[in-house]
Image (cartoon, rainbow, N blue to C red; front, side, top):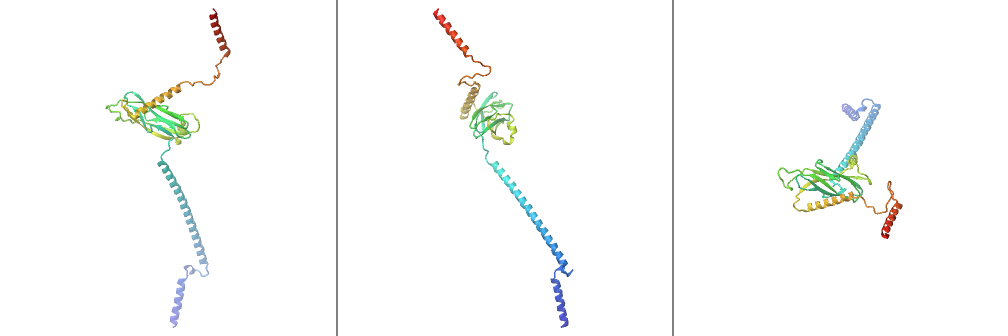
Amino acid sequence: MGIDDEKSESEGKVWSLCRMPFWQTSNGNGTGSSSSLSFSSSLSSSMGNNNAYQQSQSSQLGERSIVTSSNAVSSMAKSLLPTRRRLRLDPSNKLYFPYEPGKQVRSAIGIKNTSKTHVAFKFQTTAPKSCYMRPAEGILSPGESLIATVFKFVEPSENNEKPIEQKSRVKFKIMSLKVKGETDYVAELFDEQKDQVATEQILRVVFLDPERACPALEKLKRHLAEAEAALEACKKPPEVTGPRIVGEGLVIDEWKERRERYLARQQVEGVDSA
């Protein structure tokens, strides 16, 4: 019985010793446990701060990625949307020329400002030595329109191709730019505001047989006639409909005019009396 009691008592002590935390084996007064607790609490707090920092960084990265993705989506959507035209062209995407090899031929295109603001336009071509436009640039008020004439030299064909089969690599581009009010056109206008310049259309050259009647050729003839009439109207001096205004360097002597009329009348009366 004594041995069994001693064994059970010793086993109980060993079991209680195993159940105790490992930090209580070094010191029985509890200093080790308190230091271990403070270390664990500081470790847990530092880990918590680190987790919070990581969460804040991840949230910031997430916000940045959302903003970047939204910007990318908006830019992609803008690129997919059709460009809003400021000018209406007639014809819309082609320039028709009569096919006359070895001669300078003409084409015409109608340009109308369909926006609510003043718009500047400008022509460009891939062959500036053999092509030119009149006018090549200008400013249109809202609703204003004009007909531009395009001149081109047609080079002779080497293999006698027909006009329909004749291909031309020459292209024309019409650009537009919104301007404020009635601004005078200057050459540097498009260079100073490159980010606001829009490409209205790239025009392809199409040759027509001048001896074969077609709607495109008839429309071209009408446009050319209207362009010539507008050019002649611009050359004429403006008619004076109101009262004459005496300007600088111009003197209207009414007394002199009356005297000349009186002398002329006297001469006529003297001849009649004689």
